[in-house]
Image (cartoon, rainbow, N blue to C red):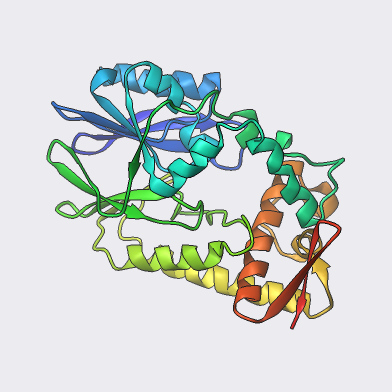
Length: 324
């Protein structure tokens, strides 16, 4: 479904079936010289049809169209190769480009299964193959990904966008800020009614710390409209940012309280946390949701380790945390 959300800016809502996200907000900025598509949707027929219906409705010349993959997640980037084949120029943040390049290796997805073992989940029950990101992944990484860094400029008609690095939800997520009109495209960094998934990635990568720092960066910008990656578009996001600060403060307190009862794996910690999900017990959690829950639990545990509240050890490839 295509809607104009600002002069010469359109939101193309791409359905994301069998996910809690419901749809992706793919944005299209049109101008006489060049156009920009921000994010592409899953690699499946439903997303493909909705994406190209919007392109057709706006009569876009894809040879004069750029595509920004805001980050590596499949719901945002998995049709980029299709658009490149049709003549589009592909962009991504510098750090995220490095991740896309690693995706060319056939070991990229299987290597993610190591996290399942590290979290203490049952690998006979859960593998990365259950993830919607894997099921709807890129068929092939775009041949040429043009890297973007902080403060690079992209111009489309009357809009002059500055690239802003917003790590947290992913290591190299980038947004766009238009100073004159006070517009910000933030992808999944800030969402209106759901909290972005902030996940454990590796030791030494503090996802929560990066996410909070990125919130502080956006908080300083004068913004009239915040164009989000999912659900509703926001006006001035300052109140929503405050809510996200409180959410993660409460999460950290909850995790620290759970850890007072003794050493635990990431999965054991996640099973004791509160979740906004219809499943009543950890045993009835959907497999994909267990993966996401453990990623979020791990990110908060690692943050608490980094600030000296917890300590960790790895035994037989399983990660354990305990109070210092």
